[in-house]
Image 1 (cartoon, rainbow, N blue to C red):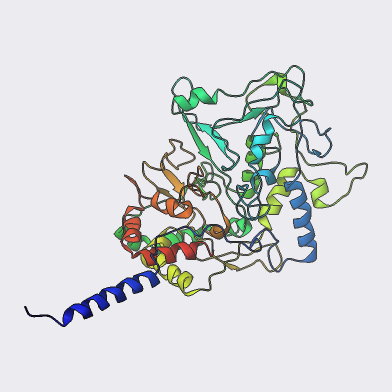
Image 2 (cartoon, one colour; image 1 turned 90 degrees about the horizontal axis):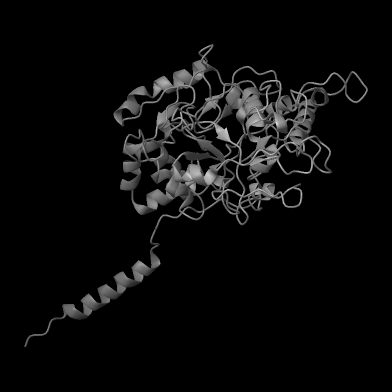
Length: 465
């Protein structure tokens, strides 16, 4: 029997390949999660004057103010809460990774606390008058608002239904008995959709970007978008036809309108932009309207600072207007390669990298180059993400390209927060872009066709933003 001298070499080669396999990373794609270290957001715009920084700090204090019904509870100095509400402060929802951001998480990120909406079921309640935490609000889940798709008669609804009412609070009118919505029944009828808070960092620069630039940059990518099945259009104001750009469906025209609507919807505070209480619940109306308003007097004086004399909505808008954008930490080879791949597969066709602000009244804010990673247009995202709600000319499955700046320190993604630390995070958010009717299908196919290591590079890049 003839022996072969290749057999020992074959064993050696197998052993060598085995050892090499142990040394080479598997590259199973994993969302690295929100990066640690300092919060790369939350401060004022660079270059502001001392007076403008002072205005920012004063406005930030108002943004963090806690509201009660009539302002008579220690530590809850604001007034106007209810009759229905989702939160008692802007900063309770816009928290991660700093004031002005989005939903916190009890174990992750810069702000580590239980979903603040849990506490509102019992906060300031009379004995035996606690309310129920809705089943979709979780201690480790995102802050949420609930919208109903349809009214009881089958017509379109789409509006926010507050999680709680002031009935049973120590500072509510005794006549107020308004119950919480029957969320269990609405969930059973598949009639509830959710939204989570959008981050507000850098929005002053977005507010100060001309329509001509938004349209020009959008038109410049028309051929490249068409080649991969991406359309899109701008949501527009029904009266003057101007581009709206704030909110999940780009439904709000300006930061002031965005602030006024949120104050009325999320906290139930009537204001100079949204004058009336929501829902017509007269038995629960405790204050003259508008509850938030400009001031004739600062105490007993006719003069004061802009913040002292303005209504809260003006201060909310000023805080957001002067809030700096997030700063990225792209510096590794993997992150740099991820940026290149992000562009080459077509993600940048919706998540536009660079814009430039126009002339500004604020110091050193004219012609500022910034990187929001959004075209601020709305796009069809398919049946998988459709929420059945239309706002302006954005239809049921259309959403604004979510700005990706600051993604590195966010915890929850997509309009309803479905992509989080328990189920894949930012990787799931990417995959959810693909469903029947989505304009992103070809781009996501390209993503999935990359090598595992290349896909990980894109995830690392996004977590460096």
